[in-house]
Image 1 (cartoon, rainbow, N blue to C red):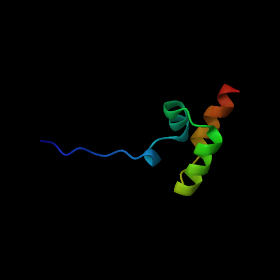
Image 2 (image 1 turned 45 degrees about the vertical axis):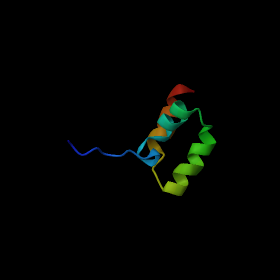
Image 3 (image 1 turned 180 degrees about the horizontal axis):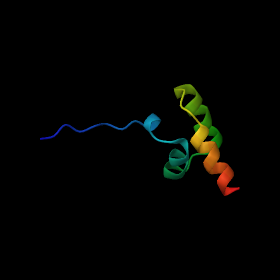
Image 4 (image 1 turned 120 degrees about the vertical axis):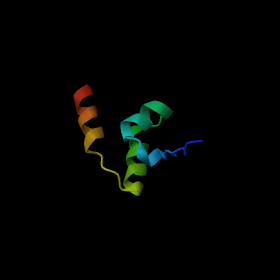
Length: 50
């Protein structure tokens, strides 16, 4: 049986976490800061939809 990879929430882009779990963008921003993830792609997506 092939080995399965586990995916952590920190592996997802913040914009995906917002949509997937219905979490406030400010909350996912704080979580990403704790995880030290880049927010460049998220900010680009937000600016594109405004």
